[in-house]
Length: 225
View 1 (cartoon, rainbow, N blue to C red):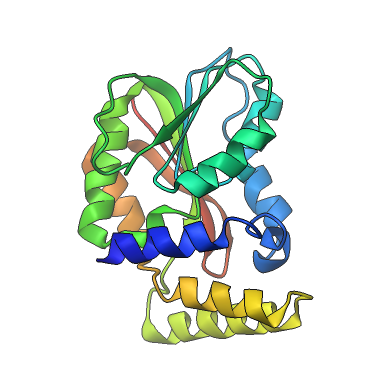
View 2 (view 1 turned 90 degrees about the vertical axis):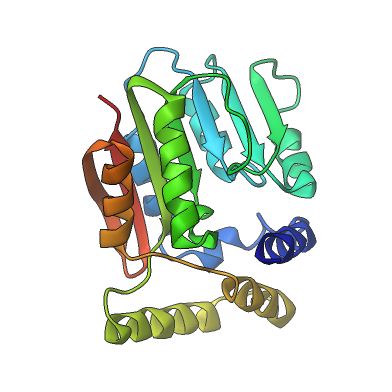
């Protein structure tokens, strides 16, 4: 199954996942900072980070909301164990080992985030997840997603692929790690920007817009009225 392959790939990658992340993602600082900029300004919000992995984004969120309740959800136990090490001696962090498509969300949140995770889902599953996210947000809450997009046309997708290849080739990353990343990318199922926006709007979101885009990398924000 696709999910089993993804889980195995990310469990295997957990040891070195953070080490090479900044090199693997073009303009990673700007990419993540854009998401962080779009969630600032709240007073002690309840926050859920979906597909939190090793907690790279969660740690950035914690730095601006150190007193908020922050929940990290991921289906990889190995990844979450890495995340826990970032938040030792904190009492307002919760960890959920679960499949975010199957999890029964009982709490409500003001902010839900995700980074480089949802593109692993088939498009019909993306719609299911966006529906769940909408239902799990408080009114006035926001969802911000930093993720990968498919090119709008075969030509633009080929440009994206070439950019990915050229960027990774230039990085000072061991060849073994480059190969692992390349293999993980074969599991990707990205949707186009337009498709992602359509799915969010169909779920009920308003003010759906793109706040950052660099080739296939994008940050999208949506609001629940």
